[in-house]
Amino acid sequence: MRVTDLRIAGPTPIPPAVMQAMQRPMIYHRGNTFRVFFKRLLQRLVQIHQTEGSVLVLPGTGSAGWEIALVNTLSPGDRVLAVVNGDFGARWARVAERFGLEVVRVEVPWGYAATVEHVRPALEAHPDVKAVLYTYNETSTGVANPLAEMGDLVRRHGALLLVDGVSAVAGMPLEMDAWGVDLVFSGSQKAWMCPPGLVIVGVGPRAWGATKAARFPRAFWDLREYREQAETGDMPSTAPLTLLYALEAACDLIEAEGLERVFARHRALAELVRSGATELGFRLFADPSFASPTVTALLPPEGLDADTVVQGLRTRHGIEVNAGQGRLRGKILRIGHMGWVHEPELRRVLAALGDITALRGGA
Ligand code: PLP
Picture 1 (cartoon, rainbow, N blue to C red):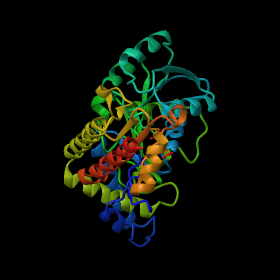
Picture 2 (cartoon, protein in one colour):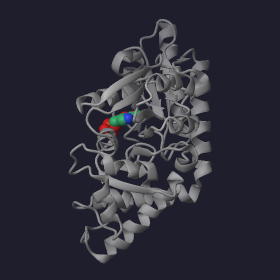
Picture 3 (tube, protein in one colour):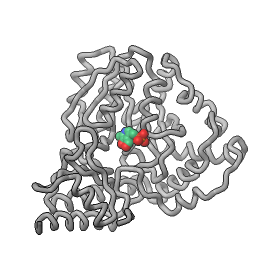
Picture 4 (tube, helix red, strand yellow):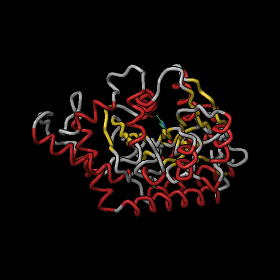
């Protein structure tokens, strides 16, 4: 069966208005039309990030965000605290090591949230920590980490709070300034409802301050260059016009719905998936108190194999969901519900899950 329903945790389905925006012709990327357009787009992103700081857009994906955050604010040999409660946190920690940072891992069992109670002792034990690397939404486990409570603690220890918001921003609340987030990056292919290819980076004043002392070499990922160029509505390299048109159309949709309503829709849909799946005998992988609004990780009912469920959804129903990744390979399945998604599509996924569990019952 042809896959018709993309229910993975990104790339996510593209709304018709965003598709249409991408039909626009190319224009001169250093002309006035582009400059006016781009400046306006960046202002709208600032509002969505709830910051007085800056938001920049770079060609790239979420993984670029890991590198961007590190090379712009730190220097070789600096000590950082990497909070790891899933595969993405683990990957960011490895990237930091490759850059020659002194990485202290705060390991939290996968499926559980990484809270201030986990981070505080590590900060106390390592007062020279320069930055805390924190994943807002751990896509591999379906855990939403409590970002709102983290900034205060990290700031009191004089460290920067660098946040992977790849599968969170635009689908989950974010108050950069109020929460003390110094830098946060996200990927266009997730809750932003756009194709992959843009990394959106919010940068606060403390992170800008850190860029002055940071000694990592940086060229393409130099945020200061992006900021300087953005003042005139420019980008350092050729602007990815089609993706920027898409992002503008996505902002239109987000603003028309209203940020709070967007977040409430994500919460309600996540609840629908959790309750529907648990009724069918699936178990939540994530601690329910911290279950993510954008992706749900499920353990299959007794006697059913996770990968068989993933395959059954694909072949019998044309629905694509994620299998487990990293050490969760073969153990869980994950349903993405971020961006352009509404109740009917998720009811269809639940009905298909019901069909697959019933098949097992009849076997
Ligand atoms: N961080 C998180 C939390 C993610 O979910 C992902 C991708 O799913 C990434 C980083 C890596 O992003 P990309 O695959 O766009 O490079």
